[in-house]
Length: 213
Length: 175
Image (cartoon, rainbow over all chains, first blue to last red):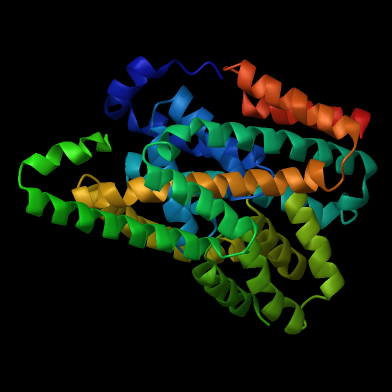
């Protein structure tokens, strides 16, 4: 719980004894798997807290990138993100342990339910607890969106993309994969348009897009 | 169907699930229900349980189906089969991502992907909010939601896990 803050962890990560690092990786994702209700995206606020704020393993922006990649590549999003982060931090073994960590709670809980508790969903207090949990999860997700507001207000294009993607999925039920693919195409086009401008205006055009970061 | 065949089927499902758990459930329905392994009733009961237990829904379903048909070993084996394709694919992508993430093209592209990714989180927020508050509106639900929002925004150190526990308790008491 009382993992010590950012400052030293970020620098010394590589010098940490490898074994401890690997165990930590497994248990962080175990914890995340054990408290994630309602699908991969609901995992984001917890990941942010555990990986970006408490441990400084990734930046919030990077996390968002991982989610975009996880969403548009085959596989369960939560698993994709776990593999990605584990692999980036410690290599293939890290990817494996992070993945194992995130699926182990499911394995244990579901196996117990399948073996002993077939009427799980009919239990009154569990239903009530879940209804409450869902309300909390929606508040957490609202906060997550708010945290990424910088990425949305970075440019007019970004704000439009944000609004369009929401409307496309909620109102028109466009597949999220298509939405992500369109944003990729959009990014590539933007790059070449900018580069074209740069070539046209030689040096003077540079000031026009200095605001990238 | 033997365990090996079931693992192969779920390997395929893992490979073709793009976009999350809901897609995985759609893909599972055909081989599992239409293939006669489980009844539709059993299947949807499993979906309900998978949605209401912690962990990724797709993984919960894989474990559940494997366990139901082939016992504990089946659950573990089928889960690993489901995870394997994405594991390999992500390892490959991660390799390239590390190499190219600082290239201008990749940076610009991600500056367009991030707002969309944020948009999709907004969608997730809206979906959960719909099923938990908007569609089943009651004053007490609104109060729990408002209280959660206040906690989450006003108290920076608020742990998501703590909030989930508190909301679970509030649900048992008030809903």
